[in-house]
Length: 312
Image 1: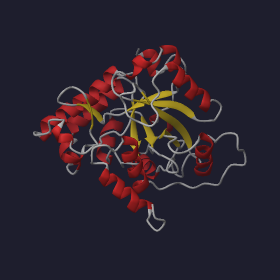
Image 2: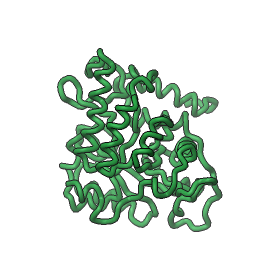
Image 3: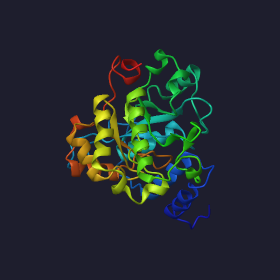
Image 4: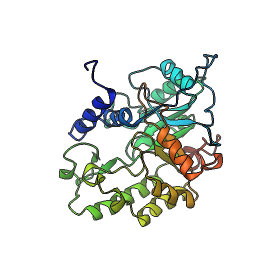
């Protein structure tokens, strides 16, 4: 990359490229974070061992915690420097599932997951995974999964016409997923959300309300109040927190108002790759609009009450 190019310009080009087949979700989402994220810079801490608890931003009674942080192209120590500087506590996630999920790192067995947990032990971060597809939990024992603080998952990988997984952010998606009737597809998409919430032992539903490119320009037409209530109702019933995404600037405020009225819990997520983690400006804007309190926010459950323990 030439030095005179701005990160925003580079991010926009990468997002455009993300609609072509072959771009990974982490590349696509990282580009979005580069375009939208704005950090809350705070003085570095004097202690270097671990980050502080996330500080409550001005006017809010909630801690700043980014539960959707990836270590791509970095190290835990470099990421902790950002955590201390921004006064945001991090939850680190790595992709977890079978090797059919194509990412630079995919945790696929107990040995790999235990190594990951050990690497983060004592670092002052929450330890999570981003679950991939519907067969991910079969890769691990219940005992090893219990070492996680939480499991995060999204609905962006969708069953195609042949039943195989389709990455909805890639180009040519309409040739593999029937979208001829946009509203009918949206009904199936909402049903997919609900199936994930009901059948997967997850704690956070990430990248909430994201739409594939053919539908993205008509957000309000597709995310109707009835569809929102269907997803939110399932999340409340199964104690799944809803992520407010600073990378996508989603969900929109009207979606979040319906969720709050229904009693949903929320989490913040940057989906940040180095050095973009902890940029929570959109999340905090929505928190102020909703007057969120600490009781509205997701907190990892104690041992015995984690989703992988109570729902498996």
